[in-house]
Each structure stands twice: as structure tokens, then as C-alpha cells.
Image 1 (spheres, rainbow, N blue to C red):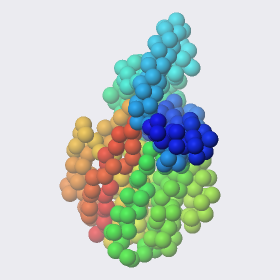
Image 2: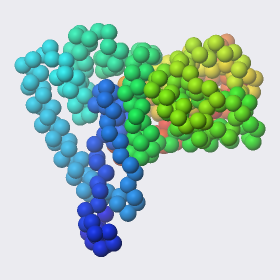
Image 3: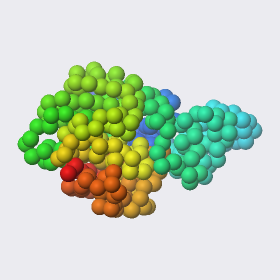
Image 4: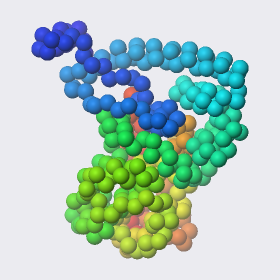
Length: 348
């Protein structure tokens, strides 16, 4: 908002200082790390268009905040040097280092945490990611704990802060692939709070949802859109339901898988002939024919990797064909678009 707009707003409403959307925690990394995924960051309602933050003011505020974080990181690093066994200090330094993109410092702090907390699934995962030995797939306990902590602010965060498009992209692709035919049985894999539910409810007769997080399932149940909801791990749950579904969907779920071979094989087994799977992945610029774990602990996948899984797959996937793949912007991250793919697989 410029000066003239602020004066006009003041005349209209008596308030010359519009509410400013904070610049903190404007990424999946910030929100899910939370700062560490142990406590959810407070959400905020969307601002009216008339009170959109001034770009220059936002940039200056972001620069000021970065300087403050740098100063706090230096202060806490000195404190940690004097008390290297402090778990709270190790967590805080690790989290600040990640937000400042200091991967080496974050890795050192997580290594210290891992030595003290070897059974903590979040610590183990982040230590592995930052040490260059990310697992092919995260520990389900890590993912469940992450989203249990995030459940209360998940919807506000993604829709009001990050311009989250994955549910609509998946629903639109599914609608096009179905071609006007209604699916009998559908499942929202990794349904979370059920953001995809309103977009796809009309596409199927029976809609199931599963998620690792009990808290997320509680939120999804409040929507009253799902015919069945389970707390479950996706691969094992699908393996127990052969040829049951006409439509499977995964909006922003495969970011918590590294290797996709087992997931795709379970999806193929659970689909009926002609059944459809629709999903999104974040685009991997580093390994277009593979996948990479980023500093947030999430995975990105290359277009070539998705194509390879269906074009040169073994017997478990030989009848799961890529029907379409489109590059899209999935959301905003630190005020920048995040590229990804929405794709459709069809069982022969």
C-alpha cells in the first residue's frame, strides 16, 4: 500500500496503519520445521486485498528480520560453544541455521542432537538429510509427529500464506482423466486435514482418506466429507486392498517419500483395471532422473524419474502407464514460486 492508498484507507476507516502480513515463516520449511516441527507457528487470517503489504516495506522488513536472526544465531552459537550438551540450544541453533540456509552449521547441530537423542525420529531424519545420507524413505514416526504438531494451523498456513495449489491441481487432473465418469471407490492418500476433500467429493461415490497423523485425521473428520478415515501407512494399507479402487489421489504427499518404487507398486496393486492415480511432486532441479531431500526434510523428484518408473519398470509396475504429466507452480515459498509436476497414471 502506498502513501496515497494509506491516506484513503484512513479517511474511510479511521485507521492509517493497515495490518501488515508478517514476513516470518513464509515457507514450508519454516512452517514444518516450525521452528523444528515441535510447535506449530501461529496462523493468520488472509488480509483484504486493500491491505496487501507494500512490497518495499515487506522487503525491508525481511532484511531486518534476517539481520536479527543472524545476530541471534551468533549469540546462541556462542552460548552453545560454552554448553555443547544443551539439547534446547542445539535445537535452536539447528533451526536458526536452517532458516538462514547455513546447512553446515545446521548439520553440526543435528549431529550433536543425534548423539544425545539417537531415538528421536525427527532428529535422526534431519541428521541423515544434512549429512548427505538421506533415507530412501523417511521413518513414518517422523512424518506422523511432524503433522501431529502442524494439524491446528495447517489449513491457514497453506491456503492463506503459501498459495497452496496442490489440491486443486490434483482435482482438476483427476476430473479430466475421468472424462465425466464417476469413480465408485476413491481414496485420498495422505489426506491430512482433508483439503482435497471438497475438490473431489463429487468425483466419486465412496471416498476414503488415510494419513499417518491421528491429529490430521481428526481435522479431516470434522469436514464430514469422507465415508471412511484411517490412521495408516500408505504402502501397507494399499497392499491389503488389492483391486479395490478406481481413483487414488495424493496431493503434496510424495514429498514425504524418497524412492517411489514401493509406493507405485502398491498403488498399482490397489487399482482396478483402468483405475487412475493422480499426484503432485516437487520438481528436482538437481537430479532430474532421481530424487533429492532438501533442508526441510522433504523430497523433490525429477520428471525423468517419474517417467522411468512407468516406462522401464519391472513386473510390479508393468501395467501402470503415465497418461499425462504437466509442470505447474505448486505454491509460493519465501515469496517465490515452487515448481512441480502434476501427473496421472492409469492401470491397464
